[in-house]
Amino acid sequence: MAKTDAVQGDCFICGKTAAKTAMKNHVLKEHNSGDELCRLIKAEGAYDKNYWLLFTAPLDASLSAVDTFLRKIWCECCGHLSAFSIGGAAYGKTRKISSLAAGDKLLYEYDFGSTTEILLTVVEDIARQKQRDKICLLARNEPIAAVCEKCGAPAAVVNVWDEWELLCDNCAKNVDDDAALLPVVNSPRCGVCGYEGALDLWTFDPGRPLPQIPRANSRRGVWVREAEE
Image 1: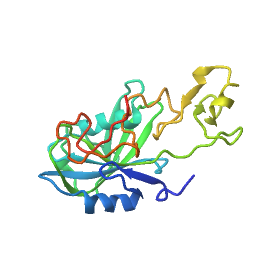
Image 2: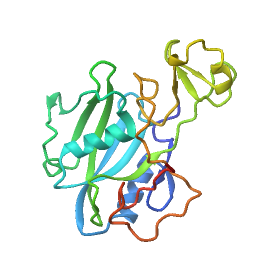
Image 3: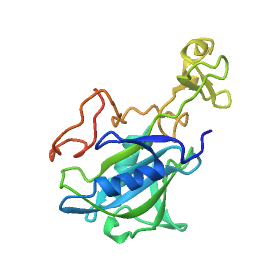
Image 4: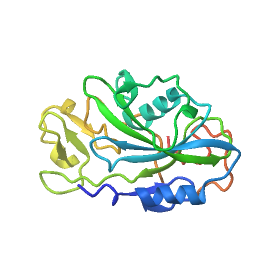
């Protein structure tokens, strides 16, 4: 697996490509303007920090908005329960973003059977233009390269009944039960429970033009580039 600060990501505002720390510095320097004060938050997979996000949340938003966002982009499969905590103590979803300060670290858990754990770090304050949606994705890691364990071709699915075996489409034809296969997705919940990333529409497409003017009524946020539906 690649080092956690070597995996590149894409800025959803201007299209810049950079590793996680460099991307954080980039968004703070280049995309820190507007009349709405927010917290810049970093999300990482607890067991694989190559999965990472940078997003903003305004001070008047509650953690329930963050919960909804994380479910859609990384977690939701079967309507499982979820929770936030700080230092092992529960931190309710009704708590406001304003209750968090730079340096605070939260643990987000989705599904208390096959649990996906996500680490959230409050980076610092950042400004943005006002928008309808509470959460705005600024940057995300590029899909992590995975290779078929049978032939070395790009992997497309995970055989969850055989010790999380990565397979290409061709080698997957030899698996007797299709129910054992889950798609390779850009999420720390890849290959867990029934997760297929159906609600994740935040796909970066360098071939599409970036918006020149922030879209205040955008369904997914001012700067977020939407996947084709």
